[in-house]
Length: 408
Image (cartoon, rainbow, N blue to C red):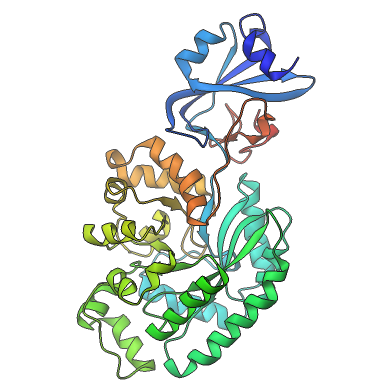
């Protein structure tokens, strides 16, 4: 029996139908449904998605169908819009951002940001039913691994750090060489290449502008860490604090621009390249308006922000100004795992009444893909039910079997 006939004859075929009820159902289109359900039909040994909507409406449309509680949400799979897979082996830190960065540098210097670590991180993400990622990459072999990975989609962002202006020409030439070499590895539907000037306090202004120009010239996605540390604003407004001191070690004549990082990016012309801005915790409402005006997307990493003492992301302000927000797990060095589902759950507890459950799910699914320049997949009638992502895993079971036929 075809799926469309199952929809038309739901009354007589109720015994073949299962309604999976969830707090939120989001098809990738429109507004998420609260207290929703999806209808799945068993046909020739397959599970077919045939309908979705408010639970009460579906229960009336398919009387007698088996009802199963699916927990929090059902949707297309979410995206992990910001992570560092090559830090998967680094122990999780619960310390200040200022102590975290030297620890990462030391881990890198010890040769521990490896393809093997990235492979373990990718396997963890895929095991959770997620295949769309935005990963920050510091080694060519990891970049090659991601661009050639058959199971992943999204963006591998080549990261550049450079505080000393005397290094700019070399860094820009190396970056352009990597672009020309690695774009040949891109595949339709796979991982594509992007650029990440790490952040304004580790990349000098001229280099930041040069990297943004390369991204525009080659039409590459751009992602930048911005306003993660509470010390960024004092650095850029008054030239004070530990971050400013570090900057002057590499550029002794450096002077603060007198504005926060977001307005400074606008002044440099970098926001014109439409970068995705990651963390964006310590921002004003005017800065959120500025981000919206330039059409920039934002990625929220609540567990990392909390563990590193960065502050609370002003979720309600971004929603007020219709800024597209996605979710990322950052790395295992600053987060307990790479699960976007748990990231959203943490955000729900953190923001409480300020965050609508449907808006959180939509952000993880659609906002994450917008941050990576990708289209949102839709749940369409007649599709194999493996397209459904069950956020709490197998209905009645435990997390870890999210998405796919194994969830049904």
